[in-house]
Picture 1: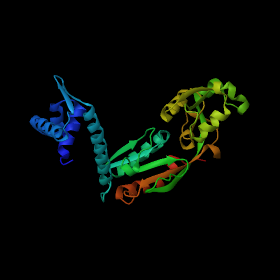
Picture 2: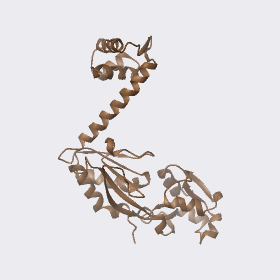
Picture 3: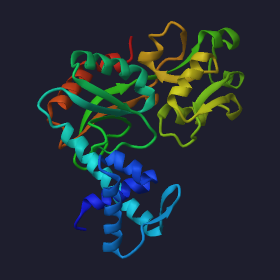
Picture 4: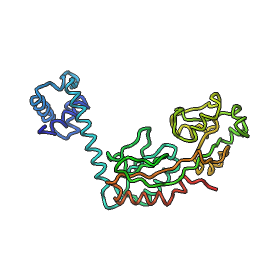
Length: 295
């Protein structure tokens, strides 16, 4: 295709449904948008849009073009993300991703790092999917479990996450503390809703606790923590979090089989940039604050 401007114009029209909306986003006159659409349809020999009083609707051929254009736009956005990380100073965007249960510990650390580097915009991404470093979706990923083995990633050990079982003081006042597995049927437990969860604590829980006692479940680590603090039951937390909170009671001390290795992962293209090296040093220096088990 000779003219990417025409494809970009068609993409915006398909996204927004109007010539005026596309013209505003692209910063061109609406006549330019119409000219681009007409030229592209003439070159391809097919109608890309149905014109109607409310605007433009993509035809089947237009939907095909939209999919290709969206993928291209995503690739350019990811390229821009990688390029942004190549500066020589600690400024611009810094994108970090981790599992959501680490957020209460990592968010204050990242805030302090930003305080020391005020030119930074911190984006802390949390989600169910794995953010792709090779596509520039993040500068640094903090991952748990076995060492990541994706090609072109630089993987460094971060810390050993210690996990214990905790409950709120209100829960303990009502239900007491189980003395052992024989008491679990008298208690209420909080668990990941996914029985196939790879988190060691949740694997232990589903294999050990009677199902009828697993009374509060969620797919969100943040929701599980909030339920624990609200008195819904006994749940797993990083020991650094549970032992530092006077409103929580330790039900079971951290066990080796509940813990997990944490890894700092970067892409080889961004690993040596100033901002990535700076945040890696900072995170390593404060690993104990984030995940270590206090004595």
